[in-house]
Amino acid sequence: MFKKIIKNTTILSTGTLFSRLLGFIRDVLIAKFFGTGVLLEAFIVAFRLPNLFRGLLGEGFSDSVAVPLLADYSKDKSKLFIIGNHLLLVFSVILFLFTISGIICSKYLVMAIAPGFLTQPEKFHLAVFFTKITFFYLFLMGLTANLQSLLYSLKKFLIPAFSPSLLNLSFIIGILFFVSSFKNYVLIISVLMAGVLQFLLHFFYIRRKGFRLKFDFKNAFRDKVVKKMFKLFLPRIWSAAVYNLNVFVDTILSSLTHIVGEGALAAIYYSNRLIQLPLALIGISISRVATVDLAKFSCEGNWDDFKKLFVFSMQNIFFFTIPITFIFLFLPDGLLDVLFKRGEFNQYSLEITSSALFFYSFGLLFFCMIKVLVHTFYSLKDTITPARTSFFSLLINIILSSLFMFPLGIGGIALGSSLASVFNFFFLYKLLVNKIGKIDWQDTFGEVFKIVVISLLLGVISRSLWENLVFSKYVKIFIVLLTDFAIFLIGAVGFKLKQINYIKKMVKGKI
Image 1 (spheres, helix red, strand yellow):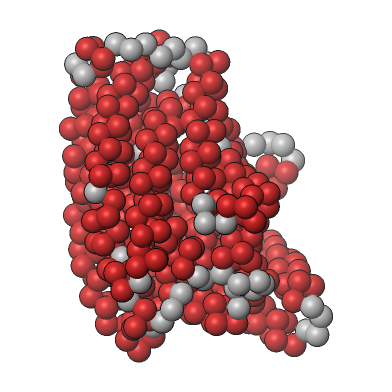
Image 2 (cartoon, helix red, strand yellow):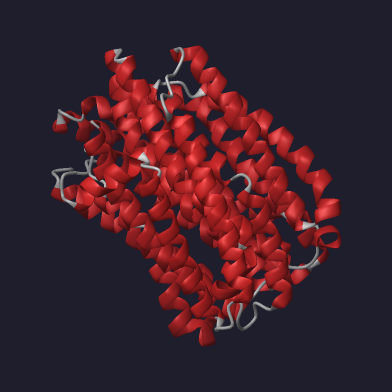
């Protein structure tokens, strides 16, 4: 069981890593040409809005109800493709209506999530214009997410893993070749082109697997499985909305420049780029791969394997996320200096972004663990529980971020989000135990203690090397990260951490 999980997680993680590496190249270019200025902040706000609905109608729907239900038909491909065709047709209608509504209401949406822009007319009008364009991207990515759910159900992870790279490639090509001619519009054009390319890639790949699109709208809206998906999805709408509202809390408060300072929205964006790397590479990849088998065990009533897989997924989260957390905590300025400090991204940009990254790092482990917990509830066909806990987490985020932003500026907003995630994790875990019974963690906590000891050593050494080495910043970061990798590897082998054995087997080709 674990061999397939590790193999599929590796595929998703490799694709995610490739995409994120391209994403860093993209962000280096964005930082150089746009810094933390007006144009970038207008684009960030515009991109937030379609991502809310994408989280609801795209990946949110796919992860929470589509994949767990479609997985039940994975052995009957013809039936699976009939349901998939109906699902795609129904969603095309829903997404079309959302897109048109979003374009019409774009002005009011920007007013709602970035009230601070109202005092800066240029930034406000740019954000409204960009928002109208990005809603077309929502339409394309919503359809793409439905195609991805079919591929996940067939345990085909390669294309979904690598397709996000197209977004970053589109940005890179757009900025490198067209920024001088279309600086005000190159970001928004790149987004739209990426949406087209991602949809076409998934559509033609699924066609090769035998899928055929048939415009049978009458039966599509009568399909019992599709209806069941939407019935289960109703609580998920609130859950996904609350998750994105947490993001919007950061956006709304960051737009209040008279409190948190100029460029705060851009600082949130850049710091989130680093936080999103381990979250996507580890948290999302592990949870998405595990969902299919968790749903299978749940359907069979095989709770022993269900709990073992849950614990195994969490153990992987601990192993990979804790070391990264300590590096972020001890070296936020160093990482950001190497990645972004050039051109328009100046010393001030570095300072405010470092503050945001430092305080977001306290929540990184919990962000990743929550992904596994939420997908575990989805595999149980329970979308209500994550919705409830997300609501209370949102309230905590609003209260804490509003309080901490006065003494800590943009760092206070990040800290509020991190502390809210801690609450959300423990609340979700308690409710999971109530639902499925006691979970045997075996030697997990002993392993975690060892990982923390190694990671603390990594953090201290990283800071010491960064401050005392006299080389250029690029040579210094190379030495720091190479040393960190060597220390963690030696420590993991010395402490005989279980994940090292799995890695050894992968290297030898046994997985």
